Length: 199
Image (cartoon, rainbow, N blue to C red):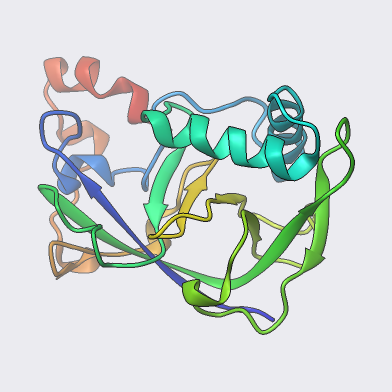
């Protein structure tokens, strides 16, 4: 069942630029995995999950979820599916992704794979396992790939840049009302400092 997924992300100003700079190219990753097609990202994710300790795929997935939660990863954008406990930072973003579908994990110990779609899931309280987020019925057809963690906030970590169209608000202000800069507006020092966010 496809639905519009609303997630939340807080960023601290000592680590991230203000939204006027941060969102110049959307919400970009500091160091993305390459290549960046959804299929290649999913293959990379499955390889990373496979490398975790565990007797079965669910334990391996849980171990990888713990790895992602331990500290911020430069190849990922962590978000929370629930607002409670999410807005505790300087820059608090609301992100909306249309046509999302939620899937279980499947496969054996050595072959993590996309499992069955979790039908009728539109709210975090309806999920009780780690999961995969796509915006299509297949990985190949999707432009979104999120790794869902079965935590209190149902954290969803995206493994690619999020386009500006998905970013709806920051600190209560609509993204369209933010004075988002262009790369040419930045000083030389700013261009050096923020070059990792350029696309």
